Amino acid sequence: MPVTVLLVDDEPLVRAGLRAVLEAQPDIEVVGEAADGAAVIPLVRRLRPDVVAMDVRMPLMDGIEATRAVLRTVPEPPKILVVTTFEDDEYVYDALRAGADGFLLKRARPAEIVHAVRLVAEGESLLFPASVRRLAARYGDGDRPARAALERARLTEREAEVLRLMTRGLSNAEIAARLVVGAETVKSHVSAVLAKLGARDRTQAVIAAYESGFVEPG
Amino acid sequence: MPVTVLLVDDEPLVRAGLRAVLEAQPDIEVVGEAADGAAVIPLVRRLRPDVVAMDVRMPLMDGIEATRAVLRTVPEPPKILVVTTFEDDEYVYDALRAGADGFLLKRARPAEIVHAVRLVAEGESLLFPASVRRLAARYGDGDRPARAALERARLTEREAEVLRLMTRGLSNAEIAARLVVGAETVKSHVSAVLAKLGARDRTQAVIAAYESGFVEPG
DNA sequence: ACGGACCTCCCCCGCACGGGGGAGCCGGTC
DNA sequence: GACCGGCTCCCCCGTGCGGGGGAGGTCCGT
Image 1 (cartoon, rainbow over the protein chains, first blue to last red):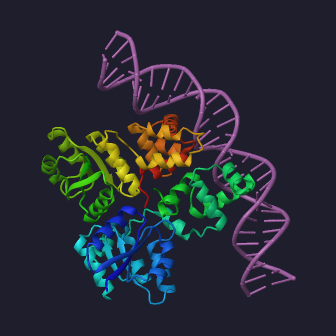
Image 2 (image 1 turned 60 degrees about the horizontal axis):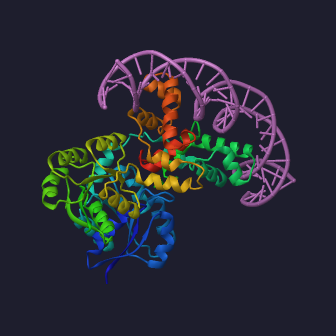
Image 3 (image 1 turned 120 degrees about the vertical axis):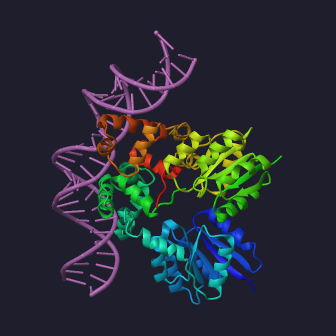
């Protein structure tokens, strides 16, 4: 029986590429796709794939969190193959700690991609040495306070909703109208968001939202 | 007769994705692939594609240089569609100056990718294909001329630089200090950017920059 | 019963922002 | 020469924004 794979990546182009590469193999079958980590668990339960090819950066739930969620909640969970780029090196260790079974660079050759899927399906774990080496080189750049800030932010539901509307370009008055509350209330929420994000104004808050993946561009 | 396309990208996965997306269309045919800009010219001469989907960052010869080389040396050159994820505004403008006919983000949806290929094949040029549709949808109520404004949005060098600093969260005063000009000058540039982007305030301008791929999040 | 989030609304206040004008200078084009 | 686009700087002016306070209300866990 073939190895069944679930693709999880927010970029349709990458999904199409992975599908094309993997389905060219007679012993590998792509049984499903998801555009965000938040959609993974029900899909895994229903499709019961052998391997999940999981992107790291996704809008709602990132690959790390999704990996944790799957391994925690699904009995006999699938193997998790984290598909990453050089830019995501910072997450490699986090993903390993979350229980991922292997790593794959998006720029790997098709044969390597196929090989990686077969390996993790067989229970082997693999790590591309190149990515780990780069990790050490690039570690400590730390020029992304916005991301860290947002991850630590713990916005309340209302604050997150207000931030979402801010990222749609709405003014405080428009947000108030949309949420059917007073303008002063919106100001309070906005102030709370700015404080939690370490942002000076709504523009910086919106930037932080984009940089952190809180909103999906495109 | 179908639109013929040559794919130029150093990542096989991306090539596979583009091929899968484009060949799903009956009127588009992928006639060749190259992994580097250095291999483009002989391929273009031999295959005579209508469109070259050209990556920017490649090991030997980048997409900008390859675009220049093709347009300089090939009679009746193909349309050049620059495809990239890494969104240096430098690259964008360099590519356009080099004579590229369009600009496409890898994270665009398949339909947008197909649309972009057809457009440039027909002789249209497009700058930020994704953003036009999205902003049109967002302000689709019709009260705002954002769509037309953005289509006309040809930011000057200075305006693009100001917008870039806006997307870094800088205030007008900070931008003025950075560019060593007066605050009034920055205000003029910002106003021009807002007008050209159909944005009401700097927040909406930053959003448009992210949505259009003018800046790359993450 | 109590504290503590959370959501809601209110006050005052300073200021950066953005719109509307105009103007001089430079480099390229016709 | 005249023209035009781009960059620079200047004026006035209204207001949306954000800081710093405070204060009710509900729900929840202890």
